[in-house]
Length: 251
Image 1: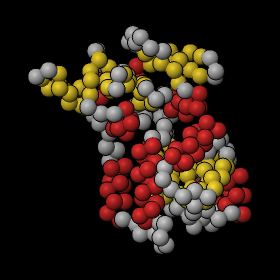
Image 2 (image 1 turned 60 degrees about the vertical axis):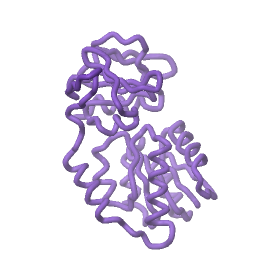
Image 3 (image 1 turned 180 degrees about the vertical axis):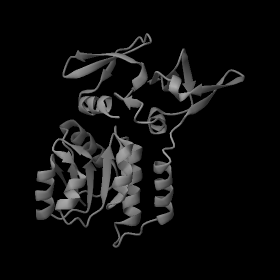
């Protein structure tokens, strides 16, 4: 299998390449394009069986590649922003993966490729696509969580969540206090609106409304300060800094 990865962040490319090599698929080559221009050039000169397109590139949106090239291979889009998903599905996309990419999500996307594309003409599951569209169009993000505390069930409004974090193999949400929830951090990331929440690293998701300060930190990273005491530094990982800044400026 010849794979094209269109990704302008070197660390993000290396992570995806590493994860692909950990999955049980036969890879002949993995080729990297870091811009729209280089991707178009590579597509015109090479044959690819599968591709991964980061949506936001340094020179524009990767959808522009589709306008400049005749693409016959399937695309798996990678993005930190759910709002691009509907546009992605209009093209040759078989899936989109939210960053940071989890191995389980990647395996799921590869499974869809194997099922619908690998053995000839694509067999699109229209029912699945319709359900995906409905979920995206309805913007079905969690408005509240129910949590069990002892013998009691409590309702936690999403708007009151300041922070979500993982610790000692558990996932916690912080409102006025810390509450253990039955979700992995990967799962809860997909349940929260990307307009209001951002996963700054492997362990922490912060809420926009509760950020009180952002401080420059070592190695081109950022430190986030919330309106609540937390005994760990909330550091935006270096590969997420640009996306985090864009998130802060988005409507």
